[in-house]
Length: 200
Image 1 (cartoon, one colour):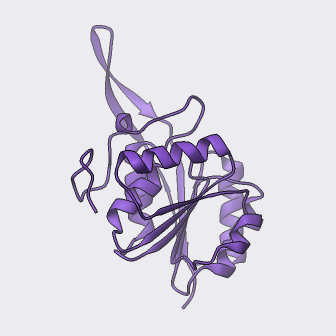
Image 2 (tube, rainbow, N blue to C red; image 1 turned 30 degrees about the vertical axis):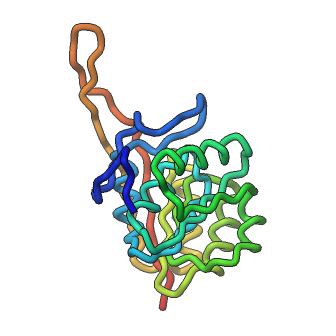
């Protein structure tokens, strides 16, 4: 699958190409690349993206997995519409958008994921447990944390589930920006990326 806006196989669509809404989070390009690398997607992967926000991960994953399926889960109707528009913008047709709150809405999903991207949601441990029950053997969970409280909760949750090959990375990215007559390096908000695998 290709897009006239992004005709490349390389992930990392520039942020400005996505439609946005004020106050709705967008996973920055550099963080998105990190998330996608930890997901270890296959061309036919089934990905659940919980707390899909602007829809950057569903769009990128949809383009990277042309034979796969992406389920974008978002509780807010207006934000779900934004995800739809961004999928249409990039010609992505293998993304299904579910409006609902995790973990309750996850129990009714027909597809069994081999990877899950958890970008938000509470209670985090209940979501992790529900996802773990549905995750295919050998599947992967990748979760983001923006503070120490959520970092601890996700780490503890993965430990309780006995996830293997747990990995924790903190992003530290600076971008060159023009401000007035000067160019300065501006920090992209750091984020923790946690990943783990379910035993076969």
